[in-house]
Length: 195
Length: 195
Length: 195
Image (cartoon, rainbow over all chains, first blue to last red):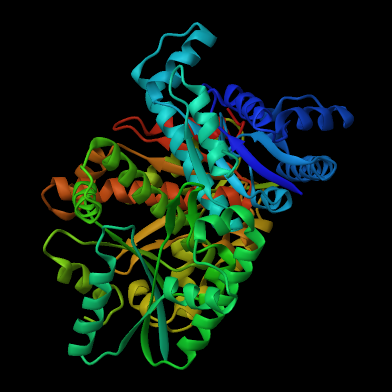
């Protein structure tokens, strides 16, 4: 039996750290967890087409192509999951901030294909997210950045709400507080009934 | 002619009190209102299957069973409504906080079946909701509880927004202020054009 | 080649001013932009039916008629767009506050028909929106009005999030700060890759 969950989080929430800890803690509890990165599969698929990976440029020129690509990536991931046992985490984004607006990471046609049993939003305090981004980019943290982070968190929740209504699967908020990523990972495992 | 509306509210908003007042005030105005409780019909249907009523345990083990159950409950409610005249209120939840995350009370396949003409969100101030829950559970009201209540109110709105876009029906917010449930009931009746 | 975007904004955000500036600035850059007003086409279509334009009264009595009307308006707009070249802006509303609740301006069946590549939310500070409404209506700006405006902005975002998930198209927030509508217009044109 295979179970699929989708774990999302905006940049700076520490989503990847949390996913890795879920895998590690589950292993210690005797449960196999696989992590599939949606972005990685997208890049591989694009390379097959000989296209560059500039997603933003792509968006502007060809929404139809993007839909086709998203569907193909969903099919590839869906095939891989069939060959796996245990719990598969699809590591992706709910709302992606681009110059063209908030892109849905999980449009309806993709979501229906992946049939997840749960959507996870890894969240953190806006001030902590801003601090982490600041370190990454050598930028100064300011009020404008924190407002932008709040909006990104909100749009992620909005889209997650729509995903839940469309599929019937729940939305779990896992808070990744500074220095306590294990708590967020345990929260996800509890939601899965594993711990 | 029969009209169907869906009335939702998180625990502590006084949704049931408001529903009963809508029924009473409508009767005084010569309009018949029936209240059907979604949870009650779910329990009856589960008993038919000989299953326990532990919805949370169910969620974890079998999302497909739950979808089937939800559809069956929607069919039963839909059949009952056909035999009723006047306005039928389906008393249910929009977003249900569980250890597994926020469950959508009205996933798309259920909603489409019920064909409501309006979604009502009974809301109250987070501090009032927290106080009412505190009395119920002998717990101390604290900031964490109030934050949790704010999140529950937000996820209910998120899912209601998706319900509106999916059906074309409006979302009415009815505020149940402390000591004034009649005002909330009148607000709902006005939205229905009854008062 | 024709591109369609949907521009929405609650009353008082200055949506119409921004739409007109998008048209003007695009023209200066050698790009043709057409603005189609959804409400205007709706009124024309209603007149064809000999119905009055009291949308709110309509809503209460006949949700089916409204769905039919919305579909017909979407078809008319879709036909007009086919005869246009360049970028077409459909000027409409995301969430419409009525006594019957927040009506979705773009229910799923309408949206799917219009196939937009982007949803734009023209927003402004709640205090600025309240001030503009106050001038229009000779009302006093107060806290209740500002709370109502915040809720309208939120419900517009909620419904936009659902639209994005349902179509795969992004949601662009364009802030129309007092005295700087050109900035909002340029932001939209940048999102379209025109500037």
